[in-house]
Image (tube, rainbow, N blue to C red; front, side, top):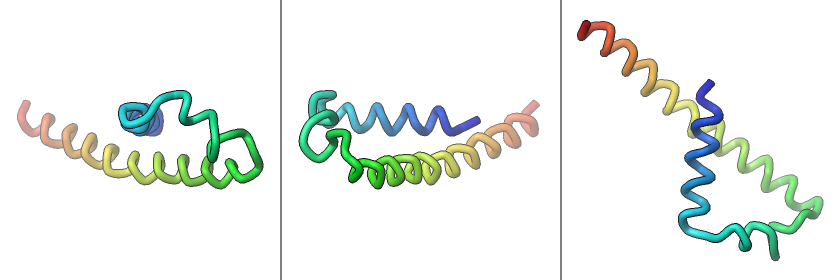
Length: 67
C-alpha cells in the first residue's frame, strides 16, 4: 500500500537533480548490468516505505486519540 508512494517520492527526488536524458545514456543504458541497478532501486523503495508506513500508522493512532 505504501510502496507506490515511496516509489513516486524517490523518482521525484532523482529527477529533481537530473534529467530524463541522463537515465537513458551511459551507465543507465539497457544492459545486463542494469539488473543490479534495478535491484538496488527496488530495495531502496522497500527501505523507504517502511518508515513511511510506521509514520502513517502513528498518525492514525494519534488521530483516533484526538477524536
